Each structure stands twice: as structure tokens, then as C-alpha cells.
Length: 591
Image (cartoon, rainbow, N blue to C red):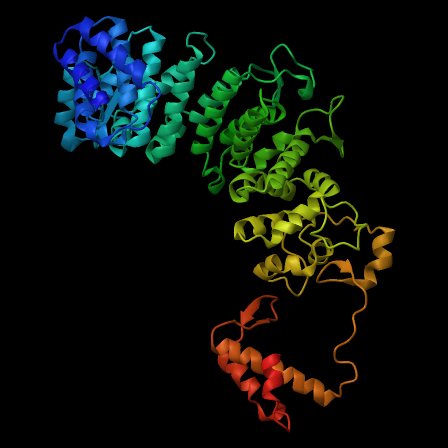
């Protein structure tokens, strides 16, 4: 009740229209509610009224301190999804954009052009011709504010971000006002030290939200505003990069210093870089689904070189560093596969990991990142798959990468006494998740190992055991053996002396040497064996008819197919296979 009385008192002060009274009241409200993120339903109407009064003040010419207090109040009120109506109109969003220093545009169909023109005239904007679609008109609703108070800009940006996060109407209005255009104009100034960290960060947060929530904005940023190049330049400027070679990066003033000796990135730079990486992920999400031309390929390679630098850099703090690398790996997975060769392009330097004359620093970092996520074992689908998929595709298209990864993950097999899933090596960990309950996780792990085996079935079974490999082989129709359609070099398989000596005694199902087991059918006549086999057929038939199991058989093409119930029933009741004396029902039940 006390809170409600305070809110009513603030509203009373606002209704006087006096600047000083409003300033004192709003500053008091902001100070008290600054860390409040949950609101009571009882005060909802009062908060909406306060929002309307605050917007009225923002449309007046007042002292900057009063505007700042108003925007702080809007930021707090915009946290409540139930009370956003005063802020999501075109007029209100335009007002907030103006304080954020963002130029506002408007797109509408010709059927609504008269309404748009009226809005444009009242805002005092200039006319622009529609370019791409003849049935659309585009008007500049208002120019960016001349406001130089960056604190005001930040508060307005925070308010718009809250509105986009909580309200679909606000998202539609923001797209219609083309806020992305205005933000892009300021993002172009990334190399100028005009804007402080918070302005840059919330410009990027706004861009991230617009591209995450609106497919049309995503397309506009990529096609019309050259978003990949724009954001790539932002990342370049944030990381203070210099370019010793076309696709080789270094930190400005520290060229030639090994990555592990570079000072960690500051918290602010890491935060800005992560917002850029997340936004780039949004706008490159479907890159691999269409062909790219030479110009786009050059753009993606340039971006890939920057991402390699991110991968080799370290942020301040273990948790932040892992998050930074996670966003980097996610984005690398969106790049067109032919452009991943930039990971191998830097020259081999002192301290670099060289394999077949190629710099493998980035690939080793990816492998270590993947193993770390594997060890964490938490939400593997979200955390492990991006790095595992990236390593799989890199190994598939780059021979040197595949050979390097195989030397680390599938070294020559010496341990033939322990099952493939037992142990602490990377191979053991990956084989363990080949039977994971999540299909995507187990398929991805199996695919990675299969590619490292050059999609050779016998080699795959050698390292994983037939039982673990069966899922992938069945899906590909390779249960009869052979090789998939991948294009790989014909290098010879190397076998250790330990493996050669034990090879004849290895159980292919488990992948390890097992002691000879007693034969349960030893001493039985052929007729007795046939009776036992028919008992098994009868049990399969009974379980199949009650839908407890679905019997399968291996086809000539190497794929599994269902055995129709009628076929199984005929087999079970074929007089040619019936024993002379009926089977003992008690023993059958026990079986």
C-alpha cells in the first residue's frame, strides 16, 4: 500500500506540469525502483498513467536533467509487460528513437500512404522516394536528435530494448519505423572515438534484438545495409586488429606476439564483441543453404579471419572467456564450408602447432573447446553440437584437418582389452555418447568419428565396436559393411603390433578381446538346436503380435526393414519346422 501511495504522489506531482516538481518526483521514483523487475498487478493502471504523463513531458522542451529522469522512468516501467500500451504507439516509439539519436523512417503500403504522410508532416521529416517496391512509400519520420548527452541516449536505447523484448506490437512498429537504418548509421562510426562503451553496447543490443525477432529486419540488414561487412568492421575495431597479410590478423601494436602471450581482452571489449557475434549469427543463420558468389565468399573469408583471431584470443575471466569462445564457434558454424580454409591460412610461426606444413593452432583450440564441453556433460545438444559439427565439416573438406584430428582423437589402437567406451581419452568420451538418449547428440558424435575413419565401415567398427556403430550404419544402409560416398585419399591403415596380435580374438560387437565363452549349444543334436530356435521364433511372434517389439531383418541393400507380422506368424506355424512333441509350456514361460 505504501508503494501505491508513493506512486499516486508522483502522479500528482507530474499532473501539475511543473518541471521542478516532476524532476524531484521522478528522481525519487527511479532511485527507489532502479533494481525492481517485478511489479504488482494492483498498480498496473497507475503505472500506465505515469507512463502517459512521462511521454507528455518528453515531447516538451525541458532541461536535459528532466529528460533524463523521464527516460529513466520509462526504462523502469518498460520492464513490466502488462503496462506497455503508452510506449508502443508509433508516436511514442518515434519519440524514444529521437532521444536515442536514431533517425526514424516509415514504410507503409499505398493504401495507408495518406496516414503516413500526415504522420510525417507532423514530425517535420523530409520525403524520400520508394526504391524497391512500387506499392510502398518510404518517408523519413524524424531526423536523429542533436542530443549530445550520451546518458540520455543510453536510457532511451535501454527503454526501446525492453519494449522489443516484451511486446510484439513494439517489434512491428520498430520494423516499420526502420530503426535498423538509424542504428546502422551510427554503427558506421565504429572507428571514431565519439561514442562511449554503453552507447556502442546498446546500439548492438538493439540490433541483436531486431534481427533475432524480425526476419524482415534480418534480410534488410544483410542486403540493403551490408550488415556482414558493417558488423565485421565493428568487430575489427573492437578487437583493435591490424592485418599483416590479406587474411592474417594481429592485435594492433602487438604483431608477432604469440596468442597465448597476448593480454586478455577487457570486460567491455568482450561484451561488445559478444553482441556483435550474436547479431552476426542471426544474419548468417541460413548462409549454408544457398550458393554464394565470389564477392560474398571474400566477405565471409574476411569475417572468418577475424573469428579465428577471436578463437585464439582470451577474455578476462574464465566464465566470460568460455562464453566468448562459444559465440565464436557458433558463428564459425554458419560460415560457408569452403570459407573455413581461413582457419589454416596463417603462417607457421615459432610456438605454432604445425602438421603437414599447416598451422593447426585454431583446429587444436576447437578440439580443446569441444572436449571441455564434452567433459561438462550439461545440455550437450546446445553446448557440444556446434563445436562438434564444425570439426566434422572441417575434417570432411580439409585433408590436413582430418589427419590432424585423427592423430589426436583416433591414434593407432593399442588398448584392445577395454571397451571403446571405457576410459578418459577423447575417443572413449565420444563413443560413450554414441548411445546418448538424445538422437542429435549421438548421431553427431558418430558422424564425427565416421568422418575421421574416412567413412570406412570396418575402420569405424574397429574404433567403436559394432554395437556402438550400429545406429549410424543402419541409418546409412551400411550394416553389411563397405564405405560411404565421401571422397577421401587412399592412405594405408596403420595397425599397431598389439592390435595385429589380438585381432583374431576381438569381439566385433564390443570391440575388445574377450575370453572364450562356453557354447550353450554344445552337446545338442541338430534336432534339439532346431527346437530351441523355434521356441525363439514363437516368442518373437507372440511379442510382435502384442506390439511389444517390432522384429527387423537386414535387407540386401544393407538397410534394416520390418518383418511383417504375417511372415513371422507363418514361420512360427510352418509344419516343416514344428517339433514332433510340443514344447514344454513351463520351460517356454521361463525362457
